Amino acid sequence: MHIGAPWAEILIVLAAYLVGGIPFGWILAKTFKGVDLRAVGSGTTGATNCSRLWKGTASFVMFLVVFVLDYGKGLFGALVSLDMAAWIGQRMGSTTDELTLQTACGMAAILGHMFTPYLRFRGGKGVATAFGVVTALAPLSMLWGLGAWGLLVGFTKYMSLGSMGAMVAIPLHHWLWRGEDAWKTYITVTVFLFLSAGVVVWRHRANILRILAGNERRVGEADQSL
Image (cartoon, rainbow, N blue to C red; front, top):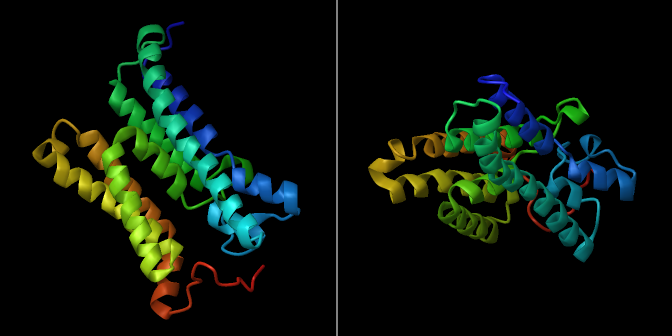
């Protein structure tokens, strides 16, 4: 079936957006607690807000479950799109190179998580899904991001600060590691990494204000809104 550009590209990017939009945190909270995550805590559908519905070890386990599922959306979107790009190029008439299409699908998965079409475009903050995409595109930089996340959360106990720090560390490491090639051979990935970092930080703007005001919730503290 020959569709041709740009419809072939639009279809695969749309598919990545719809997969990224699956609100795993909201589904689990609704199924096991009967709670709409949009109405409690931070109002987001990601791992952190979902885990606050449980206590102790169960909270940590639920955080990991939702994080892995959301991470998988990004990894799936980026990795599968690489194979799909080749298939589209052969069968449907795409003219976009594979890396560009892979990156576009990764960004679409992140935006799907943040603005899920299944919940009136209210979703999470995109960190776990972005980590999944980055693992496919820049795995070494992803490890540095995880290191930054661990250090910041360990020292400050702010999950939000760790998430933002990780997303900022990833493109900086990629730039330093690739050098001039970051803006030549790997320019598509470089632009994506900086753009995704900016989007994630923007989604945390309320957290930034709370950190500056000294009333951001730290890891382990009770959430009075639940």
